[in-house]
Length: 60
Image (cartoon, rainbow, N blue to C red; front, top):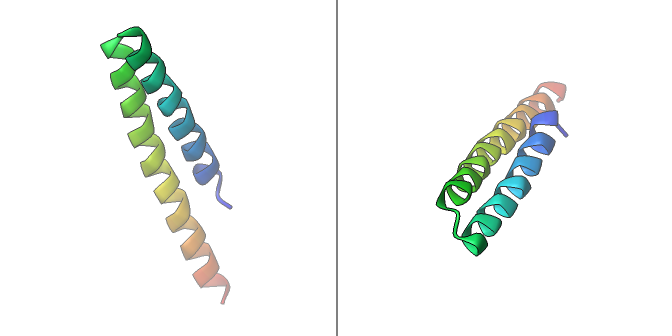
């Protein structure tokens, strides 16, 4: 498993928490930061998945 997948998943979790806390306390900035973190994490996770796919394909 690529390190980008792990870091991306962590960012998605962090973003989800920020988004929910921001929504709960009425902080629009925190909520939008959470949404941004989630998006960045999903992209990073996808990049890690591509790296894994390429690595597996080159091993065969």
